[in-house]
Length: 241
Image 1: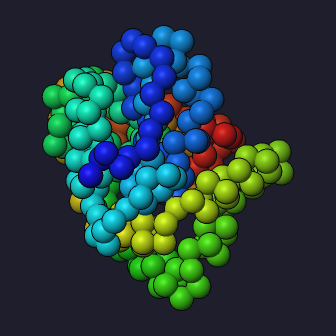
Image 2 (image 1 turned 30 degrees about the vertical axis):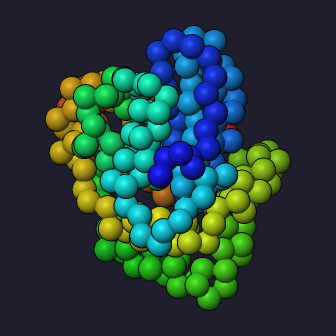
């Protein structure tokens, strides 16, 4: 239940929820939260299985994560808010919009997509699960982080990469495996983006190998409510790059 979700809550004003990506935590948003909290109430949370939030089950879905976020908003007495999700967090944001659109006044997909996994991507998810089951989560998380950054940025951001590896180490093995399967099985939610009546911002890295910018170009055409922002010289980690 969401009472086990660990979160930070700072500032006052219109509410923004920041939801991290795979093997990340609320800590990736610290600088964003500090700056935005001057004018906004900023909530950053750890999804169950990541950061400091425990996960006590073997099966999760994007809809289940969305329900957990929704229960937290109710506990915090938040009626409407803007949802910002990085990668996995964006998938959760789309599931949230699918179920609870009336509570959103904005949605930002940060290096994320509404499309389902391709056949090749699903195969890679299964390989990830098999790798972790064989070698453990630690080896996976420590090799997973660096390739998310554009090659030319890795030396400049070596401290941030080291910090992210420590954050990834907090992820529980069952959380990583269950979430990998949930990402593999999530549905296409292009229709959600096409029909939402709120402002939608897609932010993509020009050189993102995980969510190619061309992928977002198609989504941006779905509705006049959608804006696309491209970050130059950037891989999958725009909040650092």
